[in-house]
Amino acid sequence: MNFDLECRDLVKTYGSFRAVDGISVQIPQGSFFSMLGPSGCGKTTALRLVAGFGEPTSGDILIKGESVLRTPPNKRPVNMVFQHLALFPMMSVAENIGYGLRRRGMAREDIARRVADILARVDLPSAGEKRIDQLSGGQKQRIAIARCMVLDPAVLLLDEPLGALDLKLREHMKVELKQLQHQFGTTFIYITHDQSEALVMSDQVAVMNHGRFEQVGSPQELYFNPKTAFVAGFVGDSNRWAGKVVSAGGQAVTVERADGGALNAVVGPNHTIAKGEAVEVFVRPEEIAIEPVGATPLPGNGTNEIRGEVESFLFNGAMSRVLVKCGAGAPVSVAFAHDSGIGNFTVGQPVSLRFAPGKSRCFSQTASRA
Image (cartoon, rainbow, N blue to C red; front, side, top):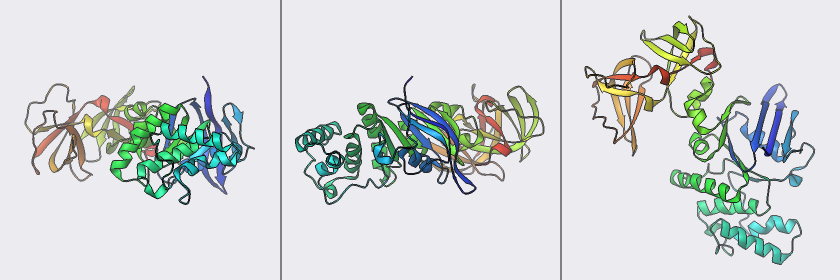
């Protein structure tokens, strides 16, 4: 397999602080790869190292199989789209796109031809003479990408480019960015703290925390099979219960919750948990079935049961949530589609929550702290 980008045990320190702490990854040619994590986790530092805006303390960076450690930014086969785009307001759209080609000394006729071609590919064929302030937010995004792609980079780096857009435009641009990446066939390296952006657009996602990659995998792998407590809590929504293991056998454990109830759960992959250990159990809101207290349990709703009362109902279009108060902890979130057949619940109504042990992920409490 050909890899457009490889990071080999990459480290960046500032004094005693390790901003990037030994990350290694191989990114296949033509893929959409995202680094996802909270602010301060090191993802921007890692991206800047790839771009050449800083030198790693140790490790190596290879693009198309060649180390670029001693290659200055303007000589690396990469280009970068920043959050605020950095388009030149005094230039027309065509002049913005052709700027890099002019710096390379390309003939005016060739620049005009390349600019016209790239404008057609981003579906803005007649925008060349417009000023930047005449463009919508989504059009500016496409022009920023066109300005990079006209230079034929091996890798395009995107530093939270949707962060300044409103919600509706972000939703639209997520789909459009993925389509543009597929159309160009160029490897995109995208950083974000927004899990929706990473899950929707990416072929592979690296979840980053404290300078390290907690897990690298497909969006489906991260969501359904988190390997660490941090990934389970950060990717998607999860309900979380603290407790102590009262029995353990293989991957199955029984956990006594802090409020006195019990849960049957499955230990996360590559983890061993012993009887008596303090743990946290994670369950997705959509994996929980809700029933009125006293109703006959429906087949398949699972053997774990927690009782509580409805605290509130949150309408959110196709999917809605019921928040259920179960003791002194945070309310339990239950998500369901409106065509699921779930009845209406009223605030204060006693309800029973059920879910299967196999849908409950258990991790050591010492490993659960983000």
